[in-house]
Amino acid sequence: MYGKRIGLGAWLACLTFVTASPALGQAQDDFARNGAYLGLAGSVGIFPEAEDDLDDVGGDVDTGLGLNARAGYRVHPHFAAEAEFEWVHSSIEFAGADVDFDTFVGTVNGKGFLLTGRFQPFAMIGIGGLGVDGEGDSGGDEGFAARFGGGIDIYITRNFYGALDASYVLPTGDVDDFDLVSIGWGFGYRF
Image (tube, rainbow, N blue to C red; front, side, top):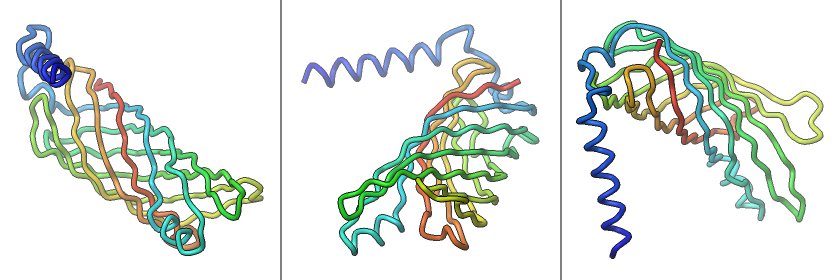
């Protein structure tokens, strides 16, 4: 019971700081200004199709961990274009053996921001490619991919923001069994 009260108190203190701090009290339009940005995030990767396929034969795909980097440009208060690269490392457990693999996803995304204040929820859609490189795999496999998702950017200062997002990567070709649900958290810098 006390833990919930302490958590609620800490959350209210952070909310009060964010909304009342003079250093953070920039005009609402300032957070949605045109300009370039960079972001870096950690990510968790889930592979639903590969998991379903391996469940049928007694195997398992571990939840992967990775990194995500993006560079973009805000062209309008409600729209941005960005390039995103994501790497996720995971492993497959089958017949008593573990095989590590890496996925590499590169997409060009369009982002639409619903709000332009300190809290900026967004939706995104992108196109690009996905590659899978397995342990002992000489060349890896790759294919076209589309990315669909959304999230929120939360501005800490005029230039720094925290980011949470979730996206679904739908690949084709030789890697169509490696569709990816990516959940990311990180920080960004607006120039």
